[in-house]
Image 1 (spheres, rainbow, N blue to C red):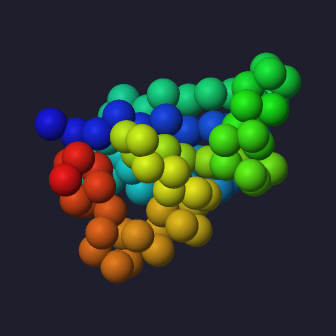
Image 2: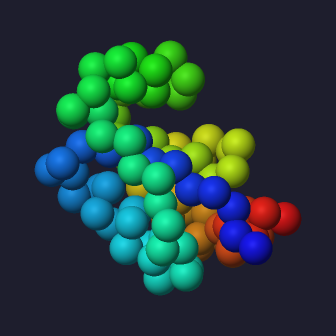
Length: 87
């Protein structure tokens, strides 16, 4: 079983696209996308939860991973797969 993945994003965001591509390459097809450009309440919620203003902001399960650079770094360290498996 894989962990639930939630990603705060905007419509035009190359880092969001790259994050989604990396997650899909890991077999994650079901990503809950929250478009903060369409919903200011969600933008405020994201900033309050993460302390960050930029997208993407990615959660795997209850773990706040951060943005694409953080996600990519986890993958390079070999830690992303375990997180995605819910280990």
